[in-house]
Image (cartoon, rainbow, N blue to C red; front, side, top):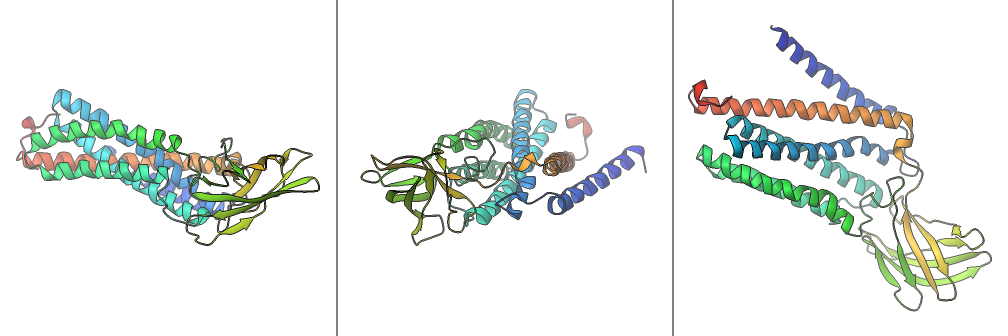
Length: 328
């Protein structure tokens, strides 16, 4: 066994042990997220898979540009392998996000803008693989696939970063889950716009009255996956000018809060709130999260190298073992 083979085997063993340690730490070391319990642990897997998706697709696009410039099979292999790794991690991010949605919001999939945009991205790259499999002539397949890959890469930042922020969405945790995030909420009027939406949560103001130092709003709520209407009574402390009682949404662990009231006009500004504080404020969670990022990156690199090597091997076999015909 050569030195490079021993190094490769050692790296794979280290990666396996590292990922095993991350999984153990995820359940045994990371504390429960206040108010969310075990559901908060999924950030250890969800976030790394999401950012590796972006990196892999960008590498794939860069390799496609190099292929169109130099027409080297190596660049095409890099583009395909990186795109496949990106597709795999994008699917993992989608699955883990759906699991979190079920645990916290009570529904796996509700066509939230972020869920919809990432599904569209998966379909775009699925079309990239379908295009490659539909063309038999190798050079034409590589050329057309590289051109399409550039189109896919242009849509990626728009679908992953622009669409979810333009749309008013509370199903994804960006609004209520991430520490330091700001959400505008919605203003409900007793004698006007009673019914509005907080993302996919329908809220309607039934009444607004003063009870001592508190302004109490009776709010009808219909959440995703729940057909019947539930009435919640969040309150606002008039002396402290701050939310008081924050009841939880039915089937969820998130809360409804009154942020401001105008008793004269009969209006209440309501919003969704996450329980507890930021996940990464805990040192054990932070270090496990960083270890997960490193581990998933190592896993992505290993998968990429393995797949790129197989693609180049297939190309060499196609060229009947003539290395001089295969660009370096």
